[in-house]
Every structure is written in C-alpha cells, then in structure tokens.
Length: 358
Image 1 (spheres, rainbow, N blue to C red):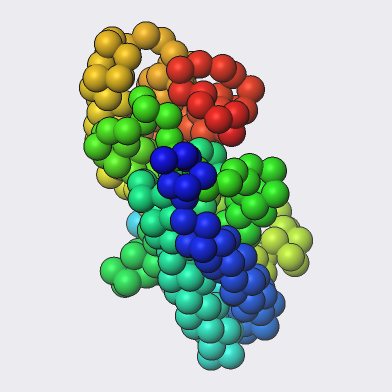
Image 2 (image 1 turned 180 degrees about the vertical axis):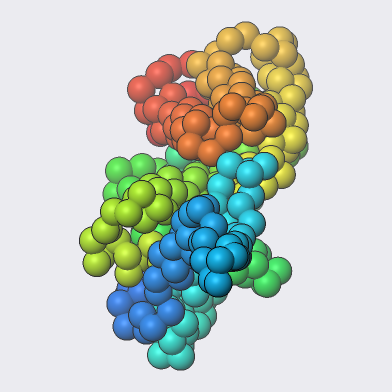
C-alpha cells in the first residue's frame, strides 16, 4: 500500500474546511471581544488611582490639631500593603466589560463564539488525525492547529472553573488567529504518514504533554506581560504621574498587578512538573528510537534550556530580591526559549527531530 493510498483525502479536506471555518468564527469572536472593550462602561475606572491616593495619604504624617492649650493627634486610616509580595494592595479592575451590562453582553457573546470556534477547530484536528489514523501532530502544521486548540481549551477551562480571566480573551483570540494564519499559509503540509521513528505510543504521550505545557506557558506569558504594564501604570500613579486616557481606560479594567503576578506564577508553577515529565518522556522515546537517551540534539538542548529558564524563574520567585518585575523578565525569557524551541529549531536548525522540513 502506498502512502497516498493510506490517506483518507475526504477526511483531510474536511479537516481543512473545519479549520478555515473555525478561523471565521474566531474572527467574529475577536470583534465581539473588541466590542466588549470598546463599548463597555467606564463608570468604575480609577479604582487604582483612588486606592493609591488612599495609600499615599495613609503614609502621610499624622494630623496635629491644637485646641484649648492641648494637642490632639488624629491618626489617618492605614492601608494594608502586601509587603511580602512586594506589591501594593489595590483592587482588581471590573474586567473588559468595564462593569457595564452592555459590555458584559458583548463579552458573553464573545465567549459563546469562542466555544463554538473551539469545537469546530477540535473537529478539524480530529478529522486530520482520522485521515491518516495517527496522532495529529506529525509536522509543524499539525502541531500549530493542535497547540492553538489546546490554548483555547485552557482558557475555556479556567472560565468553567469560575476563574475571572475573560480579560485574556482578546489577546488569546488575536494570537490564535495569527497562529492559524501562519499554519494554513506558511506551514501547511498535506496529510501524510509518519517516518518509522515516530511510530510509537510515546508520540501520544511526549508530544501531547509538550503541547499542553506550551499552551499553559502561553497563558502565563500573556498575564506576565500585562502585569508589567499594570505595574508601570500603578507606579506612575503612585508617583503622582498622569497616564494617558487610553492607558487609563484599558489598564484600569485589568486585575491589579499583584493579582496578575500571582496568576502568572501559579500557572507556570503548576505546569512545570509536567514539562519536566515531557523531557523525561522524550529521553525514553529517544532511547527506544535511536538507541540513546540523550544526544544534545538541538530540540533536546532547547527543551533543557527552557526547563532551566523556568526553574530559574520559579527559584527567583522564592528569593526575596528577585520578585516582581525581575522575576517577570525571567518568565518572559523562559517563554521565549520555548517559542524558539517551537519555531526556531524546527525551521532554522537541522537535527534528528527534523523529518519533513516544517
């Protein structure tokens, strides 16, 4: 039987149709998220400014009042500061909807469209797998469509767990559309069989965990970037500066910098053990396929570099002098290592993990 005969072209074409359909629905979701941010009310903004003003007043000297030859000292109310976390105690923003019912409606529509697009894309991934009766991540195109599916799945899972992360929606869908656009244009590879070295149950274990880890690392990276912006915004307010109207309207809706920092740390810490398992599983598979567990292949090397970078980040979070922005920069460097391992190694570097170009 030839390789062409082993491919179900009908299912392969169905997969392509579903992926394009998912992109169309994601585009509608993108505009709904834009509407949530644009038309949501702004009545509840300036929470951060008010909190920091109160905090600044709390740090001011006590007021002394002289009356009838005696002196009364009026203590100002104190604001609790999270000194242990190195962050201010300010309230979270109302969310992308701005605390407005109309904005919330657009947000709910956006989430509903995201769920629909996710189901369509998942169908496309399953159809791709069924067309060749194997795991749907044998090349960069398949890895891309599966990765973006899992990333959206992580986001929807957090929402289902009642986590207030709808502020992630716009950033997530934007990058998912970019990811799928690159997949169907630059990285597209026709449905085909795998080389013998990839015919192993470790393909399901090793690559699936790598995809899941990458999706969670992505969520952590987005929240880390937003943390840096929100922290700068809070610093400017605390020093008496006046941020622009656009920055105020946008950043006031996000969670406080301490909340974003804590969220990014938790998701990265939660998935780090799984990334460790991913590397170990890859070494075991390499032993079965190539007769050696580790050979410093470029993919192996960058997977290890990524592990070291995230280990440094987690260690930095446990070190008093490296919390906050310094640790955040380490987290972004670590995610950059993961991205290079994802794209750069496959496209620009040759090694044992290179099978069909991209």
